[in-house]
Length: 157
Length: 56
Image: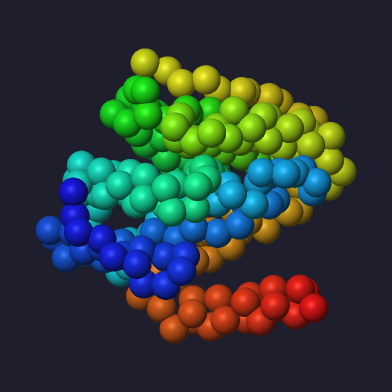
């Protein structure tokens, strides 16, 4: 795992062995939940990006570092994290596999993982919720996620 | 081992609010890839200002 550090209230940064800097950002995930949701304010979406990547190589330390940042964020915010993928660049399968890998490495006994795949006419939305089992509101976060899916299904464009 | 997945097909276009989130992710990814941190910080600044004015 790489050493990471916060760069502001919502972002973290780390540097890989090949010199690529990654930014991990957290932001409000309200679009994925019912407008009257009770617990969604404690569910943040996560995005991560390489800055000026030198080249793309598989590096297990990157996913371990991001997983550690998720762990810390969930603790600090007493909340859960939403992992959002899209099919804009056709890399969504790889991203949802990353979510699956996190589940296999970190899921057992520590986190609940729940994914949704919503196939619209024109695009596919992948979203996965990562909830620390130890959180006393874990079940409520999962219910909120499921209610959000129902809301999106019924929502007008 | 597989985790639980809810898979649904809907016979309508993606809601604009979700599309906006995905478009923004794509835009930020492109800016980070170019190393254009300045533009990203300006975007964040504007967003914070508008979030603050919505609170009033």
